[in-house]
Length: 275
Image 1 (tube, rainbow, N blue to C red):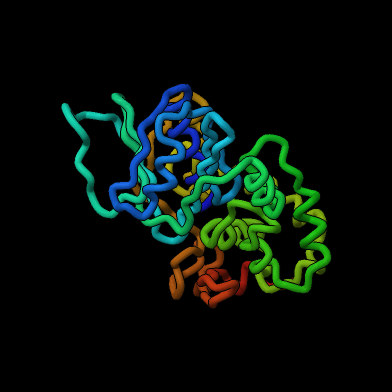
Image 2: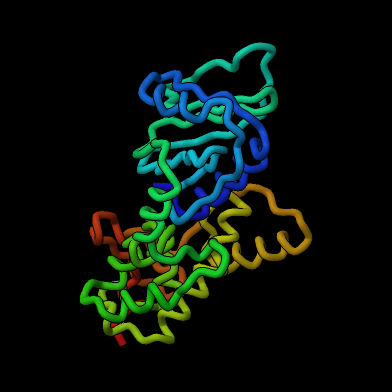
């Protein structure tokens, strides 16, 4: 499932392509024809994300709400055709101007909602490390009172918005946190370290299009960002994610895996043993 950095970058790209324009909205697949008609021709005001949710405001208090789910994609491309761009696959929604075409395929959710409904959705979400002035204390209050494991809590969007399976596995390893420790046993200093790591790492994901967590690659990306030379990465390396049975890059122990919170968690039993 796309994690928060993907939705943040998508909102950025949609904003760059459509802000201030009046895109034509259609549903080539037909399943969103009524919703597309509601926003077609309206001025695109701005796009934003909160965790794994995308919101696009159109004039007249109409908001497009998208959740990509496990298989959804929303591509934004330059319009390079003399006529209408060909439709590839099952396109739920298309936004088109003379300059750009954006196609939404396979979302878990696609709806036109009111500002009040936007507020209802966002009020249920935890802080997003990528949003301006997030409140990590809100997440800490929920974590510190919970008997659920920290691995489960990091995936709970009501606790922390935008973090998915890759980031939770990698950040818990980076901070040497036992993923099975209950939230109420996590020290505040440990939570602060996790939060600051996410605040540091997610923008690298936005810049490169990949989740960057291995320290050598993190430093390389930081250096390239400092001089404005960041390109999208073609490969992603990881400390533990999808490396079950392989040796830990730090201690050499075998990486383990177990389903936690509905997804396969990856961790090192030696580096992340309970202390």
